[in-house]
Length: 242
Image (tube, rainbow, N blue to C red; front, side, top):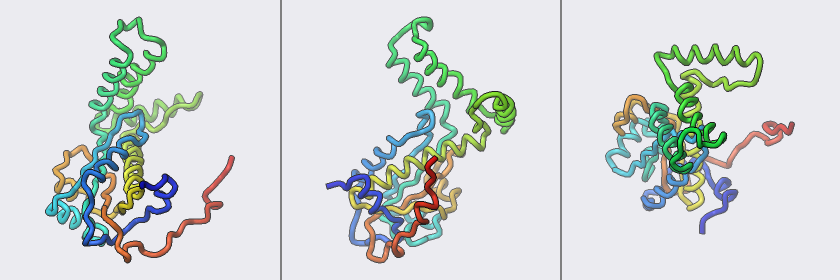
């Protein structure tokens, strides 16, 4: 029986050593990745990809790129979460086509106000925000929106660097969905910050515009795999009710 959400969150730890004698069911891990793809994402652009690494040679190569740290070296499988801001045109077009199909075939003047707003969002606003040329358009957008912001609330995360962060935030939300889903079925994970991301990209043959969000080691925890009791700052220090 799967754990409840709270039970899975409490069970999840960053496990750094995995049992050698227990393999993972590929299909169960894949289902956890399907859960990952249901995570919330900015503008529903889904600027992510998930690389489920099961090949032994690939695992060794990715582990080496992760400095052969114990979590990587003993992992039975790995998942590499990749941010794909470069795919914004393709993903925006997919949203637009899906919406038009849902609204039905209509002439432009037959769309409701709400439908026009949504179609303009993907057809005009997203291209305005994501189009880029050597960082120049982003800088122009930033200055423009800061000036407009003097008079009314505006969206300010409009530079190239800002939109990279947006893509990585969405990818991280998906990664968390994945890790909680794994914990729910007694599979363990460790998100690894330490890696040579360029080498990881080469191992997976990723395109130039992709960016590694995180590499997640997967397996079943060894008795020595959890390094001590969980420590968290007292909740009252991080909680503010306003």
